[in-house]
Length: 366
Picture 1 (cartoon, rainbow, N blue to C red):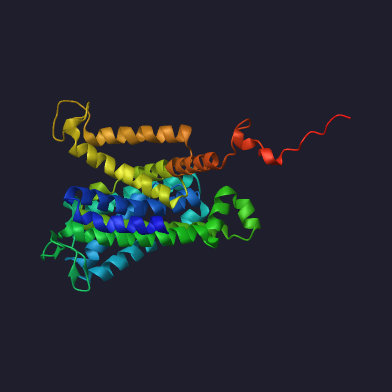
Picture 2 (picture 1 turned 135 degrees about the horizontal axis):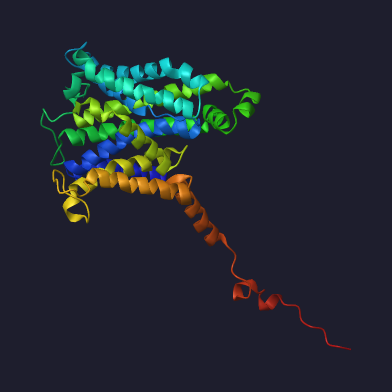
């Protein structure tokens, strides 16, 4: 509880000290963490391979833009955000019969088709998606408060723009994701999904409805992805079809593999690593060896490609030396440190000898 309170205090204080660049990295990382937690529930806990996570992020992002914007119904932005998450869950529900009957690489190929189908729809449905150029994102308004820089706001002498305002929204949504996902994993549904991942036959013998739980995991994962899509849209302020491609789905798989399958904390750590690395390398490209600054054409490696090489190498190292990811590595280090602290002193030291007063005196030989 103490660590949680300290983390909340630090997160709430950061907008008063960080500039817009670092806050933007934090916003993208929090949105990616929400989506990674959803994919971790599906692939890490339920054992279902999905390559279509980018499709459900696109449903959430474009669903919010269309529901809250013009052309579109023009709903209140808060209502549009909730409906966009539900729309992503409904899309997952429509696909859940396939997820309930197909598993492994076959499910991965089936979800891969969703990415290509969704990308084609995003490019061709101009009236809804804006086509190749995408659409601008309406700023979120909640109770008359706007999460944009249109109105001036100063808190403790610090001007609060869009990044500062969205920061607290992102922290709140990530906190909801964190606690709901951990509650799900620790409850009966989580235990059922773990049993389903380990052995479908054993899970069915124990009374787990295999098809229903696999379908439910896909729906819940889709809703998390839809929420991440809404958060990304608000952070980017413009959505374009090319962002929601197969590369994005692979990035999310990299997040949960690096962080640790089936772990909320691991998915969060992997999301921060994969999201922040290319942004940091882009900003400091001129100070890094073998990395070209953005916009140069001298044939060297760009920051985005270099970042992909690095976390690709991280995946290989994780699979070889820490298959349970960063979360498992940290857990083993903690256990080792606790074991060293609790270990008895070595034999032969003064601590292992009884006190002098307790020693039995030798009787004289008669």
